[in-house]
Image (cartoon, rainbow, N blue to C red):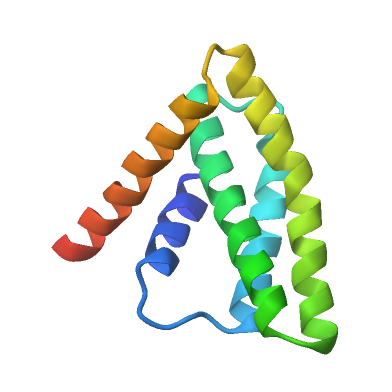
Length: 121
């Protein structure tokens, strides 16, 4: 999941948006990785997976509003499918004792981490 985490950080800090094809390829890469590891993730990997999934959902939802036709439907389906993972990961973090506030704070740190990495590149 580290590879996908690094990639989403890069995407989030780019000036331009990636193409539909790049977005779809990344989505498929994430789903394939999650289907392999989702049951046996340690806590750190769980945080990174949730961050990646939530950002894909957010971006897909935003693109649905900007796009029409087949692409919009595909973005919508990507978002819907990943929401199941996001809920599962959120529940697992909740069971580990984390609150919604803890998750928001951790995400802010993760966003800041990506910005720092981009600035130092």
